Length: 147
Image 1 (tube, rainbow, N blue to C red):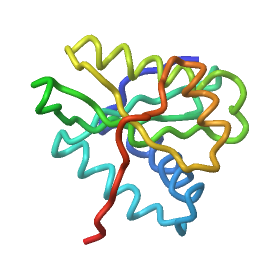
Image 2: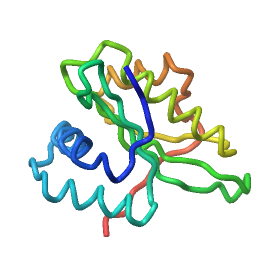
Image 3: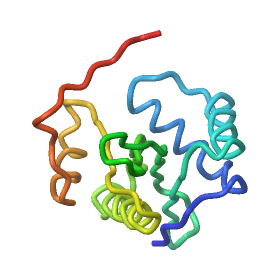
């Protein structure tokens, strides 16, 4: 298993994974829109993606980080917005390796924190995060304003 930072040249490998991730969360399949979204993130340097490639050179997972900052700490942070592993590669530690790679990357550039959210019923993701040292926030409530 190889985990590496993705580039725009990997867009055709990542697009079906990204579309699968969206479908996991109930969205309709749309490869063209998924490709366009990813292309814009690469072109505008708005995210960092890591790609998991198995021994047969198939893409089996990805994670996407969005840069942010903490005003209080006056430091860089990242939002781990997406993590997806194809069903056939689940329970093989691909997700844990992607999360570890994301954390190593963030530390290497001086970030002080990774933040993520997951669906309340996604027990396998919650177990992964807790086993990887993540702590569930007990100090802040999260709110959203649809626009």
